[in-house]
Image (cartoon, rainbow, N blue to C red; front, side, top):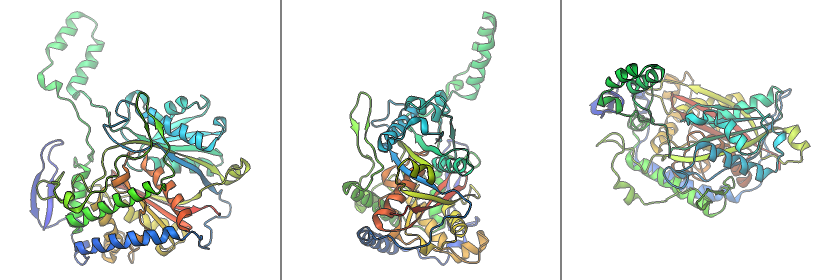
Length: 493
């Protein structure tokens, strides 16, 4: 039986129904394990393997992914201001304030001259209408030359991934040598619009020339005109919120509530350890105007299984398994990375952190496969790079929901799913949790929609150095049924 959610009208209450699963996910999980004991085992194993990996610092000797005739593009440095739960310390700021702080943090960390930067690209999802090109406003605020071009991209949760690969393209094409890419999101203050009826009336009123015309328009205003349009993390094509989609995905892949809670606890536990051990080197302090200096992410809160069990379903009520504890939370934050051609970086005396190698973008059905981007993107990027799953030393996947991560792991480990829905002969395999998100993830560190991609890449680079690996694989899902994956290669030490 499948827990079905009728989307209905946007904003209306969804009705629950039990029916036979008619979607493509029915058979994908028939023979897959679903016991909570599995989650407990991998949780314990991942903590054990994490400490072992951090103790190994000798880099492995593998071939480089450099290609003849293709420029080597490197990440020189990457930073982010602390990711904070929305409605907290950043609540009175604007998105460009956060992006400016990240840019200034990058400048302070690298001492790169502002006039050396050829281009700036930023990703964001929910745009502030006053600063729709937030990249430009943040760049000017951070003191970059008004002669430095800047533009903003949006691709849901992979917006800063798109910003980075846009920078890679500019450098690879020989258009630029130095690009700053980043992302920002401020969920504390999202645009709330008047109803369409009111907007049309106000725009018409603005064009009215006589008092009589204005009074006639005003007389047509009705009480329902004042109902605001609230933004929602929902699919335009299906009117379904992402939380509902995550609940359906977890049900389809037989991911239990306990498995999801155990994975979320793992994320918070690992993030707290990384925070306490000083491993989150990308975080730069931010002196918030009129408030204190923020130095660390405030969403890292290890709990207990007993406390997590008390929470009620957040989306599909009362039978759902997705709760506030096993979902990423609304987050404010910004990130920035300095990208260069290898020749330029070395000429300026920098020691890069990593190469950015092959990457892919994928898209699939936004109804039943909304959050399966990593499953589709991972085998494609591995094939493009000529690698296997076993060659990857570090995995950094975006954690939208615990159920989403566990469903992807099951889908990646299913020959049936690969053959019937991906057109592949066999599965790619599931990443071993001993190499997976060892310093926490979006569930614990936070997820500012437009900024997470840069965090994934720089965390992969730092983990490769710390754990003695050579290749990292970054992957993420995004609204619209899209996804991204990229290979990060440690720069020779």
